Image (cartoon, helix red, strand yellow):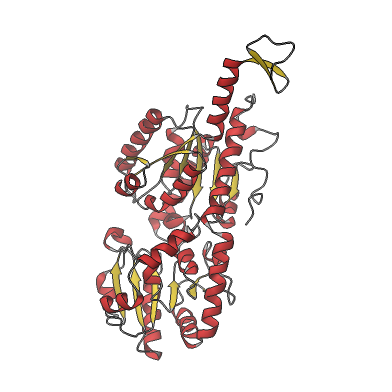
Length: 440
């Protein structure tokens, strides 16, 4: 309304007299504040984050994405996508080319926020934004991966290099998001992230409704059993990359032990092998366990395949974030046997909604699989509890709300008057006061 001390074209706003034009500009600024442009950069599996991006868009964010993966799913979702070449494995020439492409992309697109995932991209993206004070980077550590899981000389030699690079990249990272507290503690211990600028958000979230629709829309269990030649066999399934670090040799040895006690059980291995380079198990290793082990490669009908399974086994030796495959198996109410590794222990409580076994222990994994196959009542109870936990703790809506809180806190902080001290030396109110404020 008009204010007695203001002219005809001025109004009172928050105790101040402002012109109508100023008020329109202020409204536009506020609109920009609550609905910033977010560019999400990820690796080969980036299409899995489309539901996450669509939820952000529904909340008013302008979203776009970039990565090395297939652009078609993003186009079908109506999301602007910027492809660039990126090598998953160690390749300095490719990494330099990716760094230059990302730098140019961010300058051209000029988002307010950049959200990045992937071990190498979490280094390249912050470094690419150095000097761009109006671009805020949110980095998500979705597991420590091969670098800190492998015992190979190469991995051990690269660790101090990556730690130093993370310390450098942290200078241009506004917030680091961890998917579990193990990874957060590791980064804090090695001074790879600043206290007060990191938060734990469990997992990437599961779109329960979409998962259930995909289950119904996919082939029936009867159809899948017929196509895969499973007949009426009991089925143990895993969904992961067919690599040694993901524990596939352990699962093959466990399958042989299970076969001795229950010859009718079939093990279904779902996930890519040929694309995994030197880390992959060989086809010969898998073939040695025929006919009770069947590898079907990468599949787009995982929700339906989970409906065929009697047990889900996840033998990872990786330092995981929170494995998506484990969350999907839990959402499908499958009884689960997995390893006592970070991320897995965030989903499974031993003896309550599944079983935890040490990594690289095929005999104990086989014993727990046999326990679930032999006691279907307990298996069903555990599966139901796992599904309930995922819906309560890892539902995509909850995950998105937590990320929105991070983004909004960050944008509010960016709109305040700048401190004379560098960001990592601030001693006032931290951007995120405590990692638990978004809940578990």
